[in-house]
Image (cartoon, rainbow, N blue to C red; front, top):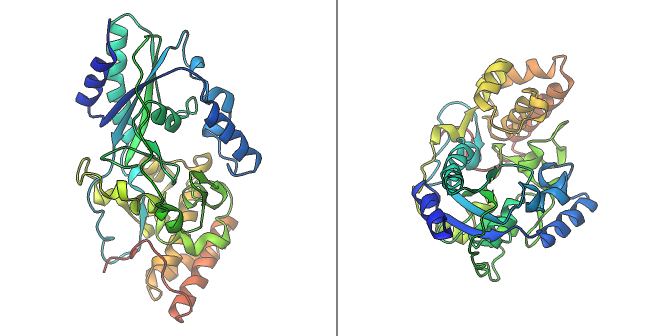
Length: 355
């Protein structure tokens, strides 16, 4: 016999900052929201839990006789990322992508799973998986509340967490919901560079920079300047969120060197090197051309307009045979020319070239 209290202690000892338990009932409200946003096109072709809402909102499908979900949160951010490295144009990486935080999360959940199996129960770890709406599970398990940014806000840590669960056939005591702590605050809605948070808790992926960076085809022209220096992901809604800003400094340190990527180096690196270096990211069709596409947009926004190395590399690509890269390189050259002429300011976040 193993209790919820014992499993929570095991999870916390393994590095989780919040652990809660809920039942295996269908996430009906989450399913309705997913279906509604999918019908309106707000998923923008995103798979994840949108691919099969009936499956991702039905914990009973995770393993035979599912009775409980033990949900955990692992922190992944702390401290300032610092300025971009000096001398060369750099692109910024969102904090969640600076390390394999899900590997650490799965290891911690694995300790809970092992304890359940040792007590004679079935268990299955579900993390970064289309099979479960992890944010809905975290809210129902009492880890935190659903913020207006659509992120789960864990008391004391805000949204700087990755979420996962262990499904089990063990009957465990459930936790109570956490009260909403957003009140009238709307900083995340106002801070979104493209207005992608169209209502409290509702994100239109068609306007979300983090999602656009993961989609095939050209990067939308109308959002290129708004992309600023973001090479992968976007943390803006989290950085302005009061509960997230009050999160403990240094709970898990972020390697500042992993938060910045040298754009010239990225453009010049062979495909296999790029995938080895950034293979944990969601790269469309595992095609490194999309990493270069993103880098070209960022280059136009953050590089020094008179940098001869940048202008030479962009010109070569603009005159090359790859139509996707040629178009983005040409745009970057025009953007740099506008900035050189004073008709286009450099876009955020922060300087992409070290001061």
